[in-house]
Amino acid sequence: MRGVRRDAYTDNSGQFNFPELIPGIYQVVVEADRTIYDLVSAQVEVFPRTPAFVTIALKEKKAKDNLKKAGGTVSAVELSSAIPGPAKEAFDRAATSSREGKPEEAITHLRRAVELFPGYLMALNDLGTLLLGQGKLDEAATELRKAIALDPKAFNPWLNLGIVMVHQQSFSEAVDTLRRALALESNAPAARLYLGKALSGLDDPEAAEVEFKAAYDLGGANYAVALYDLGHLYLNKGQRQRALETFKSYLAESPKAPNASEVQKLIQMLQ
Image (cartoon, rainbow, N blue to C red; front, side):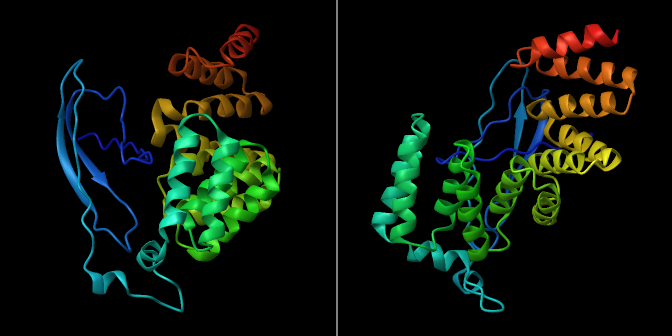
């Protein structure tokens, strides 16, 4: 009723979670690949100090709608149906290895999945993400570009490629890439956060401030790190009071953050 919106992604089993919701009635909207599934929603009531559970089944579009193509592009449903069994098995093994904290093993399985089926978009995206986590930025960018070439309208590869470019300090390219991602998902807090980082790298504090605020507004406590970046932005601009207030807000949202002691020292310095 207040127009508050929060977003979450499912895990590999389709599970999702919205923690610490204020009691009330919520509308949960599930958006998957729109070339395959219809938009579905369900209403759920959240009571104080009680977990609420909701199960939502995706509904596939009619086959004739799924197979529509334009300009020589390949529909996601065609790619999905063409994935051979061994490639799917390798992808599933990668998911298991990732959950067990074995990223190198997961990377090996994903490379195998892509070797068996070069058009495996999800495997390419996940491979790029894991390589990013390993600090193998050039390799990550290569795999994510392959995913984008398969489906230029897939949001996640654009987002992850933008994150890679921020880590590479290729800020101009990162800005262009993340804006492509936001053209597909305008309310994605991760894209807003990293766009803010890229704009800061380009010494555009006014534009970066807008993105950091948007990331926090959209993502809430899960994106409190945007307040940390915003605090440093104010500090660099010489706006000590605004920096102080922002760092305090960050600690209020993330009192157990790994950098909490560092931020506490900054607060003491600014007071």
